[in-house]
Image 1: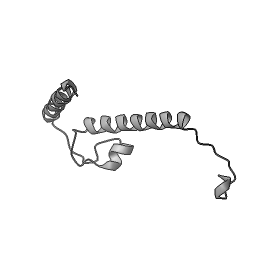
Image 2 (image 1 turned 30 degrees about the vertical axis):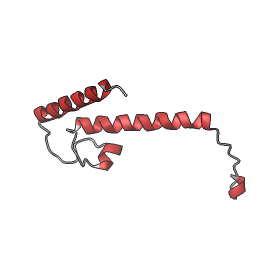
Image 3 (image 1 turned 120 degrees about the horizontal axis):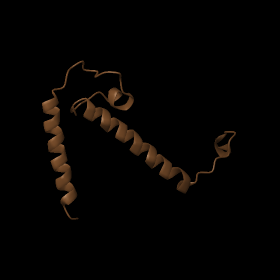
Length: 87
């Protein structure tokens, strides 16, 4: 911006930029949640892994499929319960 000593005159248009920012944030959140679920939904998972991803689990551990399935089932029941509550 020229008023701060820059060479570019930039006009912020909220209607143009805000929806794009919200869409970008939603996309990144979905990617991070997918990585989190894929690696067993650990509390305290590596933030670097969640945001950037690696070719393999950074903990070099095998997550028990049954344990992950139980957690997934519990999360689904909580999500469904919350969705059924009338506000």
